[in-house]
Image (cartoon, rainbow over all chains, first blue to last red):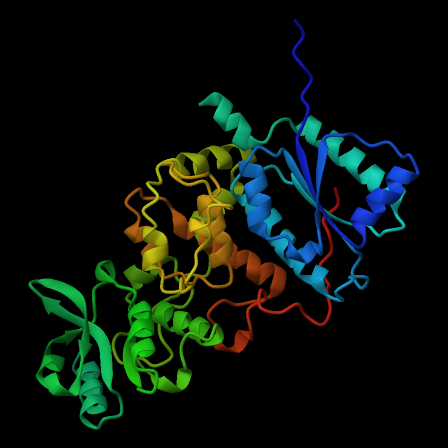
Length: 143
Length: 269
């Protein structure tokens, strides 16, 4: 029997004002993107703590996508300044501890960028499929 | 040692400080001790603890200062302890006006062991300045590993964790009343070893806060090389935000404010 194709689990943290609205736009525009992403709506991407990202990986996420407003467009003016600080730091720390670079991705997507959202989710899903299951899952399987 | 004792004696006798937190030998062991004017003769036995018998004096000072917020206390500090005090001032845990430093310069072997970039206090009452170690070879080694190897190495370490919270409890910088490591929504409870992310969550908290005293690693019953992880965290904070942890000139921690502008760019997919 052929092995079942790897279906990654991807967690998306989308900010209410830009990226989530962008996802709405992608939806009403009938743009297709893979259903592997589970979106969690947050009021601001700046509210996403590194804990939440780590918790997602612990719980079996293969990738985490954070979506926020472009710098300067934040509904709370500068909330996303903290998002990028946290995520850039976490990306590098994860790399140091052996997570492949890119399992955590941050993208600024505005409410008008439905096509960009669909494309980002498509590309990210493809990338995670190529990478395979997260190292945490692989370690659990090997144990 | 005489210079240090004289200084402490003078501080206590002239009521410049309400107490001095240092070390004394008790039952053959160097242990932290609270010296006061009432027992001035004990100062004759005040010592500088050897490198393998260090305690989180900064943490003791926080407790003492919290009990008597108006009093001024003297404290024995190495380079790391002083960096810790600087951070604690920034985080509002101690008042710099209420602290008098009795400074130590660490010997070379201690600095080499710690890979310490600043092995002396700004005030030196004991010891000579030695050669600081600017690059950590332990961090560099992990940096050169392939991702898969690095992951295997770290998980092997993390799996030994017995979740004693010793790293947190001894840490002079861990002052929170509520701890994410005990937050049931963020961390699984009732399992040993704990979640693989346990040490990472702590590493995130230590970034820009860890003053690299190394007590966590020495305290760890499972010999997890925590220090390497926290050193890397600080290196990243320096690289990304230009923040020099523990330096009085560095301004507030990058995690404490949003900033007037954001110059960091997102990573390409």
